[in-house]
Image 1 (cartoon, rainbow, N blue to C red):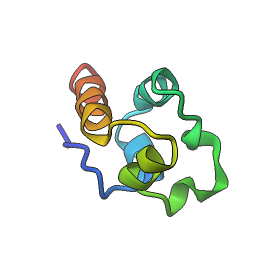
Image 2 (cartoon, one colour):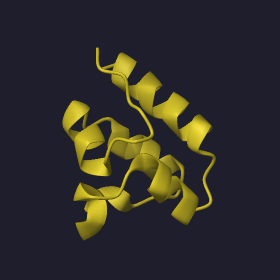
Image 3 (cartoon, rainbow, N blue to C red):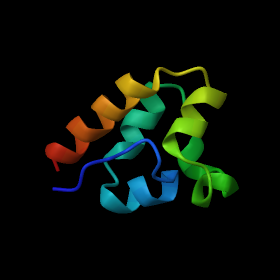
Length: 67
């Protein structure tokens, strides 16, 4: 199982597991459909959307673990 880290891009996270889309949505983030998702890191996106990056990472990793 791959571990999601805050310095990974959104696109990298989506390649690890499509289930992460639901996590981004629950956090009010639609980054997976954004054209900058190939360059924007999870941390940058969280900061832009005022989301707690540590909570987001935890939730993303939980989704990946259940894949």
